[in-house]
Image (tube, rainbow over all chains, first blue to last red; front, side, top):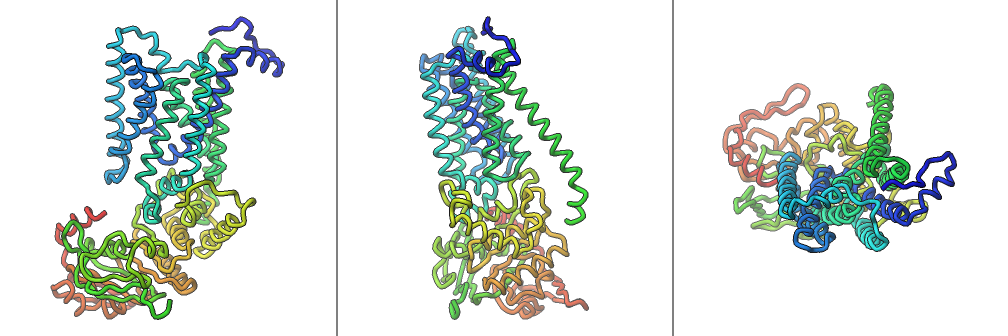
Amino acid sequence: MRIELAGLSWDLVSDFEQLTTYPFMVQALEAGAIVAVMAGAIGWFMVLRRQTFAGHTLSVIAFPGAAGATLAGLPIALGYFGACGLGALALSLFGRGGREDGIAGESATIGTIQAFGLGLGFLFVVLYGGQLVGLESLLFGTFLGITAGQVQTLFWIAVAVLAVLAVIGRPLLFASVDPGVARAAGVPTRLLDLGFLLLLGAAVAATAQITGALLVFALLVTPPATAQQITARPGPGLALSVGLALAVTWLGLAVAYFSPYPVGFWVTSISFGLYVAVRAARHLYDTRGAGPALETA
Amino acid sequence: MSGVAAIRLEGATASRGGRPVWSGVDLSIGAGEFVAVLGPNGAGKSTLLDVVLGLLPLSAGRAEVLGASPGTATARRLGYLPQRRGFDAGTRVRGRDVVRLGLDGSRWGVPLPGRFSAASRRAAERVEKMIELVGAGAYASRPIGALSGGEQQRLLIAQALVRRPQMLLLDEPLDSLDLSNQGAVAALVQRICESEGVTVLLVAHDVNPILGYLDRVVYFAGGRGLAGAPRDVVSGPVLSDLYGVPIEVLETSDGRLVVVGTPEPPAHHHDLHDHAH
């Protein structure tokens, strides 16, 4: 996907004009924005709920879903949504809902589901006849091959996901931070757990078609984790998470346009660099601030 | 509310898994009293809280909470602080936000920011008032996971109080605290009990840190339970009768009570306790 015209100059306006010359690039920027906003918001709750591993499993499960759909001659989107929906259901049933052995037991269950999903995906790819042409795009996405129709579908899915998240957001926050008290206050914590995993599944399925099964995860985890390092306030934290996801996605797309390396590499590297920088700054701040804080405690 | 008992049990039996935890319990707790719920592990202290919350119906007898039979309507007038191990150190949500969740965390939809809505501003003021009441102003803006056990406990009491409950149910709030913090939190609870006029039911392992503050004690042991003034209940003859074995209560020179001779709770009691949670 090298473009003859692509050449970086110091003139930002002409760089931006170059960036938006081609429709595929405009669509990639649009799709990237939608995916980033959705992933930044859902991911903030995922990181707060310590369900990162569940999110990773849903991303991985998207792969056998897509591979299975290809094998069966079904639309790939159906495979993504079917697999992520079933995965969310399984995670909610066998995951944390009502269990007493805590995070350790939960992560073992999730890991088992994930390993099985990967095995299925491998089987489907082999059954398909060893033609692995589509495998790379299943795993790493087709960011630069998005159609206008796909962008529109993605937009409506994101609107639906974010609308539901806005309605359940506050009780979900309560149930995530303080499940025991939330349950006593009448919050349906198990239902919310299932609802959130289904939203996460829908977001992953929609995103995976564009970023690929592996890179969804980069947008779901890194910007929210970075935002939570910066602020412990829920509202600004969510906004920051969305903003960071948007920034790294667009920056990644722009840098990839002018460089020989893939979009996924740039998006993950920029967000990783940002996360490391914030962690380091936070560490410095905490160790300096610890002196007086300890005296007053 | 005067004249109506906060909690009244008559011939009450509570069962879990078809087995009675305690039976034939009669007690009456007045509005505004500070009451400790004592007894060995598995004797049914948390079970009493579940009955009062309306989560566990009695298998026999009658229960009345704030003048009505316990259920969702009465539970709304209670503030509840469940037994816990504390927040994960990585929980990056401010103490202030945790208190706020106690006020409107169960509501659906997005709240308007304070500068656009009078209700939201009033809510924020109520949260600040409760934070001041428990003396948590200095650290309410720090992430709850980064606070000490005593600081978390104070914020959680503020959270339980923020909806103006008529009764506070605190399940072992002193358990994870060191001795000086136990005394400080007990004093705080008594102060709230008086200034806010709420009834407090506090489940505790050890009566001593709270002995000086209590109006009444409910003691569960041997499948039975009884209520009375602290020094009347925590006494040799009463506990001997309750446990069914001779028990002595010694008083140290500084007024602490030491209970000697309680049998180790039988193994099935532990099982019962574990299943119950």
